[in-house]
Image 1 (cartoon, rainbow, N blue to C red):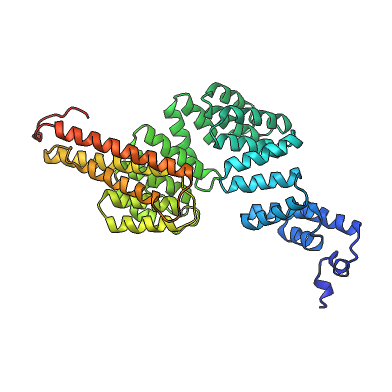
Image 2 (image 1 turned 180 degrees about the vertical axis):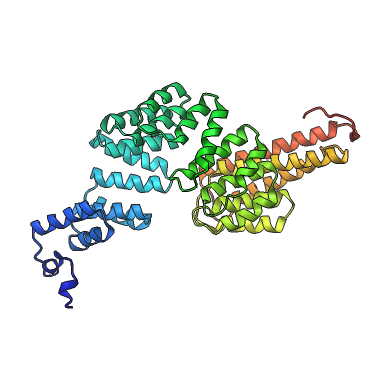
Length: 413
């Protein structure tokens, strides 16, 4: 077979530099209608100077998760057309996928200033506003998007935005307009209205189908609900089968194990999760805290060193939550052990743990890869809280009476 027979129909003239407008249009129509990666590649390789072909290529890269290559093409396009709304929208999509919400919001404001009825930009701006905690703005943007495209996808986001704003009645009204609301949305409305038993039953039924598209979100919400209701027996049963095939669920389970005092279980599972790209930072954080809670200082130090080396971002809020959960789980274990032995739970262990946490925050502040000003403020705030609570713990130990006997009761601290 000749080489010419294997080429795309439009490429022979392209290679000779004589591709006409009709062939280019036909190639683009082919790429758009099939939406297949090979068709998009042919279109871009043949007519790379065409903005339509560039957009198709960028969308393909975003769909594949190749954000670095997508950003490079977007940057090239914006150099040629700095005010192009389509390229700004694609840049916002890339920033949103990287978790950079504030820059994504700025790009979307530029897009909506030029094209205020752009339904994709309205939807993405609503998602960004939710991520930034601005429920009122999210509702306003998503209502505009619903008027442009009244489908269940937009309405589900609108339900979640109303729930974020503490308005379950408004969320219920939107839910009634949906053709097929998911169990996750219905459970969220029940939970926001205080109907926790009905929410739990819905989530448990949905969690029974591991092939469902929203299974990860269902499991995460179920863990949250069981923690909120302190249903530890059900929580242990739900967490038992969780493994690395659902890394987002396993990451959430790690936080739950810390608060339960299941430090060995957390360490074993987080060691496996630390090999999964995108979840390494949180896995190493939970592993470090779990190791520190059981005095495995070498393991904690190794986890901290690995955490400093990897490029994955982790927020100071997540760091503070992990340490708070670890301290709570350790105190619960100490309290149970002390009561069984008839000893005073105030053994000074809390002070040691707080000193360990302070050392971690001080190390992060003094690390070679210096944190940003915002991260530094967060770390300094966490460090101040640790020192303050440590001082309070010392005062409580100084004021505490002699150890309790096995039959005595103890006033809650």
